[in-house]
Length: 196
Image (cartoon, rainbow, N blue to C red):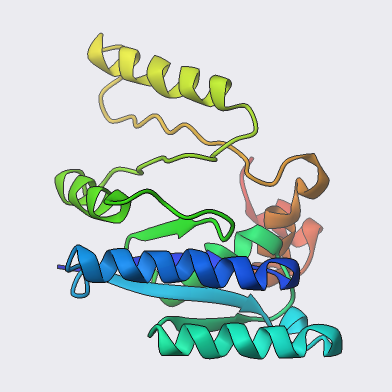
């Protein structure tokens, strides 16, 4: 069975909090005997780790992650919260990936429940807390999609996916900018090769 990659990222103001959040996840892995099912990853921006004013805090974070057997992936540049998914997806394209926040500890049994749900529904995307700044709207869209499925309103061969933005207004477009810069020679090249 493939390992589920649990990916977290952080930035200098939250290095200490991220250590606590990842330590809590490591504890759940041990408590629930998930060592053979889960691989933990911390993605860090090389730019942020190398700042002179945060180098000591970064070294403490990296040292703690190594002691906890958490893999560190260094990403060039800074795509902010997207770096908890995109670099991990590039390194582990065939594994399920669970992205987690660096600023809260998950409730007891949370990771075990996720692994069990993934085993029951291996081809589904499992949505958790924090997927949109309008959680009521997100919940309505998810529930509405379930109603469509239950009533047979989704045409055969189609899959409905409900998507929310975690970047909010100040960073809209950064994920697309990253994809355009990484895989194309600018916006014009991308527009000429993608059918919109």
